[in-house]
Length: 394
Ligand code: CTP
Image (tube, rainbow, N blue to C red; front, side):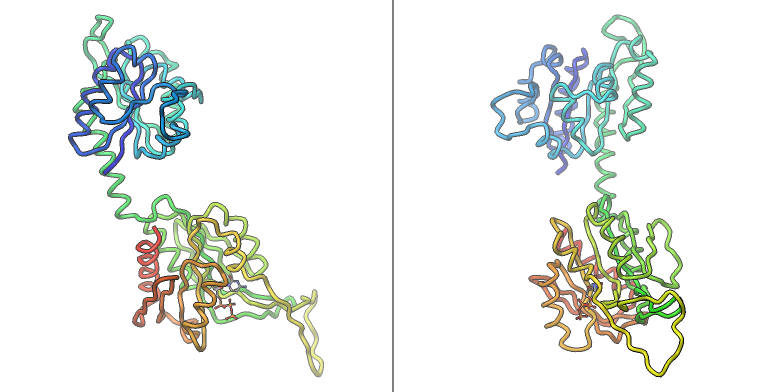
């Protein structure tokens, strides 16, 4: 069930909001009402309380509310806000960044869709300041339901009447159905996903480096799939020959240190991070400025690179963190250890035999699940990984 918050501001049409509340309730929505103090002079909160079956919020400083910060609680609760009627004043306040009563404060703390169903005197309706405020608010994603023409409270036949209540109900229901559809088609809509992909190269001199056979196919395929599912995707990628996918932010790096630096720049804002890169655990202690000339023997000292995933695990918070475990033996045992040590939600276990190929045979391992999959194309593997993330963690 979707939650609708109706904001009633102080226009004569305030009484019509009662029809909107009951119409939306009939359609199965849960409805709460916030009124401005002026609206409460036109129609009593009690009317909305009996229609909505919820307390009506008017005063910011009301002591009776059983939640601490009511305006935030309401903003969290609602899936959409409809301000009906929306007066010249409330539009002006929101456009001006003013939050001085319950309704304007809830709107300012709300990050989903807000509709203003306009209703006011025709001269106010035609005031260019209103047009400017609407233009500004539209830029930030606020939506407007235009007023109708008709007999206004001031006894003139002009534009300014609140749109027919049934029409308003239809617009709001349609909007909610569409968001519902987007959230089932696009389960990652609104989510930020970061993926590390490919190999790293650890230079010995200007032309030589240490690396591995990872192609980046798995990481890129996970990124492309996440994009299709609606996510905002960043791939921090080591060198690869893969064509850059559209609509995915690719950050190119070469060494493990560079990868660590870039991942940490983006880390805080992510909802989900998957470490699919084959990061070199070591790098040569020194990188020569010039090509090393040959001698009888060459000894290279290696020093440890940071484990990017381990570091991410330490600062995980409520992110979903997924790693890969490429193993030659004792696959599950070693992967379980990595899951715990790196503080991961899930680990994709695969054999090193899959490196550089188009296929992968994986086991998905979480704290309380272990699922084996047949050998599949990497594209199919990435679909299964996202399906499991959705089922287990979203
Ligand atoms: N990883 C990482 N940074 C590193 C090394 C690994 O982020 N410096 C990540 C990989 O992207 C992968 C996971 O850690 O998701 C596991 O990598 P793997 O090479 O299988 O294991 P290691 O933790 O390096 O352990 P070992 O090499 O001892 O098996």
